[in-house]
Length: 434
Image (cartoon, rainbow, N blue to C red):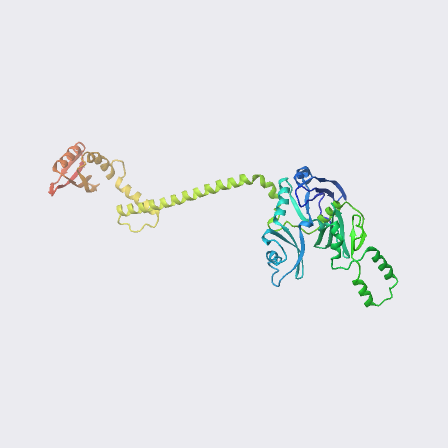
């Protein structure tokens, strides 16, 4: 039964680029040819590109370019059959198996029927078709599109060659001058048509023969060749005429029902929806690259920030322990913040004029003017409203300079100054003036 498609285009290619290309559009529903013709060469495929729009495309390739053969399957090879098939045929083929596309047509018991074709030819055909915008649904040998008969072969002449189908997955292409020689070489017994007719008349008169004799006669049955074009003269076999049809129409109908398809493995066609994505492929690739770069930059930035955050965390904990050594554990950053804020509030007082911070803000300008003097430690007494500090200078006059600078805002009690080597140390007490 033909596939449930309204119409389809069948194209028969040739071995060489300069050979004619036949084509036909068939309608299974109307059972008629919609359009047909012949191109001068494969380079003119663009001329029929419009017929491929919204239609399935079946491509027939010359059986002369395809080896249809069978091979015995070793025990235990069934699961990896597609992989081992080329190597099973290696001894029978004259070419390197890496140069050949081996397609499994059928598997019967321990025997596999295969089609073998050169990669370069499949690539040539597909390249020409794809360049013209054809989306190929099937590619199959032309001989396997002829009708199949249980009691003989089917044959049709096309462009001076005879296409012959021998079985489900067997077929050949023979030049007219070699046809008789090929038929004579077949395993099935062959007889000329006249002899076969005489045999048939004689068999009608001998119906009473024994069963053993009948079996022997059956083994001597002549080969029947069902032909759709005029039979050749003087060629072996019983040539039985079938209803004549256009050969391309016959092949197109067979292509629609055939299960064979050389587009397997690396040539397996992608789903139809991918065709519509193809124009956006480059844009999608570019967008993907840009997105990848942005993601990479973001990850690098995040890693850098995380690393910097760890550094800040370690430094904040170091400062916390230095300022507040009474707190040994830091269970969380929020705990650290609360303790630091509490200490700042304590040091800063309840208003802008209380606490140690206003004192330090007023003391700093004076200390900056006497860089030779440095404060070693200080103590703030809020109850007594005074600030005490120990200082070290290189000479006595530096203490005097600092006292002079602070006299305007503070009452100053300066303790005894002591020289120890090249340094002078002393204590200073500051109180705000009333």
